[in-house]
Length: 303
Ligand SMILES: Cc1cc2nc3c(=O)[nH]c(=O)nc-3n(C[C@H](O)[C@H](O)[C@H](O)COP(=O)(O)O)c2cc1C
Image (cartoon, rainbow, N blue to C red; front, side, top):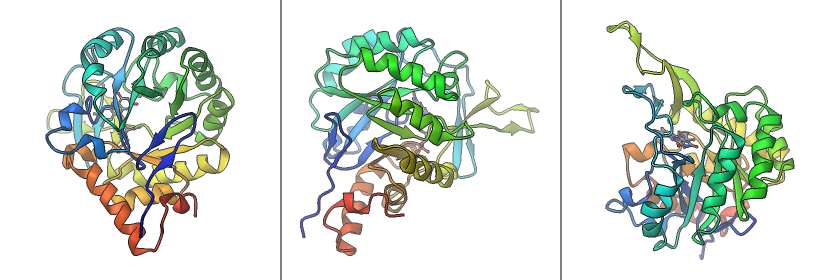
């Protein structure tokens, strides 16, 4: 039986399969080229990119937690000009979609990054991070109110001509309302979840485990929260939903798809198994075959 794994996120963003990598956990993709064939991926989402270069937060900025980790990397990156000059050229060789994750300290910053990326033909989509808990200005500040989320989305709708994906923060009371505001403001899709605000204490040293005290929790520990939020958002909006948070295998990915996600992203688990993405793609096909499903899209939102 021929099985279709291709999905359409709308506004020109078509993936050969529903598996993407999550920003900040997969570098610029090329770091994983020795482990997997990057052309097998639906696409990869590169590191958070800002207008100016950023050093990120001081070490320690990562700590392992039960079934997950807390990070406070703080959007370390070389800035958008560095991305365009040094990273983008090597990404044009891939048949998978390349999506740039965009962050800013102000609405104007976000728009300037998008304007600089707009001439790059290979970048069919940007993912707007309005949900980073690890930076003082910007990031999550925009993602926790409907007004802030809509303001950034509307500015990017003007600055960016192709597919606009907006990444939502789980650190809110009602994520479905934020998703609705972002849809109204012109987003083509929403992705969720970013990390959950968390904290860990090193009791021997009698101080917080990471330099910023609080950070973002990711990995399998967050998955049930993420699946619940994807289910709530998918019932609220009509644009496609991209689900992520703690995915380690095809069954995990299917939880998100059945809850309403069109595509999924895999983040933290790339650190555990750099081949998790291709194993997940193979696992999705195997699941469809075992269950007599000829098109993965038929499983979307069945819960
Ligand atoms: C080390 C690290 C760095 C991250 N950097 C970014 C980032 O730059 N931009 C962003 O939108 N999300 C970033 N994230 C969040 C992930 O993309 C993802 O939303 C989150 O980790 C949940 O998925 P997971 O449990 O599969 O990792 C980062 C996560 C980790 C662990």
